[in-house]
Length: 204
Image (cartoon, rainbow, N blue to C red; front, side):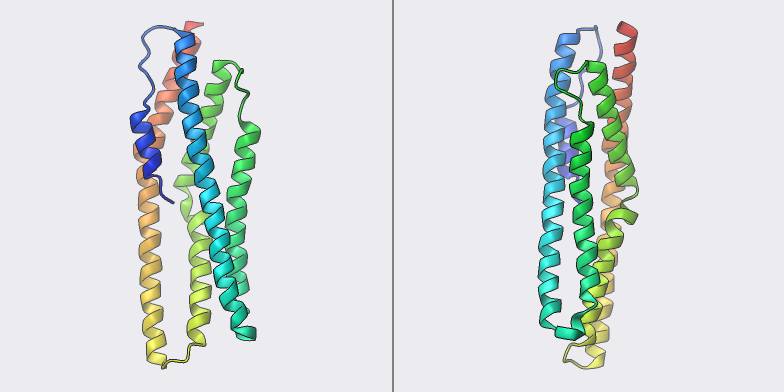
């Protein structure tokens, strides 16, 4: 998952410092920022879901062409489709929990804080819900193809070793990027939103 665009969005769209309880200006600023973030998360989830379905179709076709020997590929397809389903479910959840546009500013702030905490949880636990199915699917597919490849055993073993190195490197990079996003984007933004909420309550 690539959250560099999200980082750039927060950097360009930082919340205004609290000087006075100008609720009208506050509401407009927050609404504009919230709409942009909602669109970005929407297209991120759509992109991830579509990519999972596309890759599942590609490897599923390969497994089908292998005939009976390719039956383990079905498990890889199910893992990828399950991950795509997770992103679809996230979109449904986000839509159901999003407050109305005319809701009170405090209600919308609380919803945004809850959404940021949800993103914090997802990015902090990316190994379990995101990497595990992807790497497992890749390992199943690669092992199945290599096991029946018409090449010498030493070539298959070497290819398997290279595949393990590549999958491990991709997984480590994904974990690092997501942890960086948590530290540099989500946590500062959460602190800012919560401070904004406290100031809003104190002004009432």
